Length: 117
Length: 114
Image 1 (cartoon, each protein chain N blue to C red):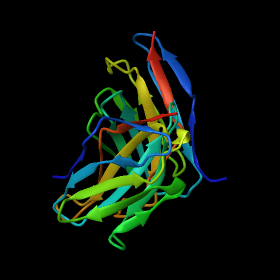
Image 2 (image 1 turned 90 degrees about the vertical axis):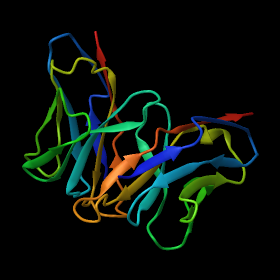
Image 3 (image 1 turned 90 degrees about the horizontal axis):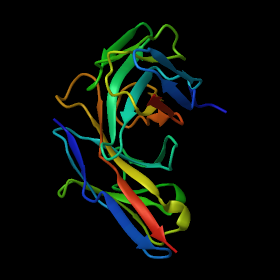
Image 4 (image 1 turned 45 degrees about the vertical axis):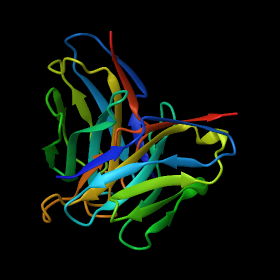
């Protein structure tokens, strides 16, 4: 079985300070990992994805994430928060739970990011 | 522009009614999905389809039905058997279900029971 844990349901930062959104995963087989952002009443937009290439992944809007297999983590970071970053962020894992058959997606429960002016 | 179109954005359902949410994609994707989103619970999979005329139940399929008669279309019917249908519904698609293939989302539909 696979699972995703977003360690914080809510993170609050001041504008211009760094952002850290934490994600741990569990998967028996080599996973792909994604971060999505959702603004209120909108669909989810892909920020970045890891698919077994470089472990440091750069995404849109200055976000990046590092895949750490030994820690089973895929934390999302940004050096300097902007007001427009206020949204909900979802960590997603994709793998074949039994090593064969269809790939399954598992979503974390989300982290709401607030940015204080 | 290619994308996923969901309609309507807002829908109200009376007790005992069936309602259908539309989802159309022009990305030429094989796989399509329906998710339900409730506050604090993340996304839960209702149904998915990997090919025309075939679909599988997700984690919370009870009270819902789907069809996949065309590659581009994957409508979701919320039946009267769904006792708590008020939620935000998201349709998504991807090329095929394989590692690394990005899943793309529509803008979502709000369903409210009145």
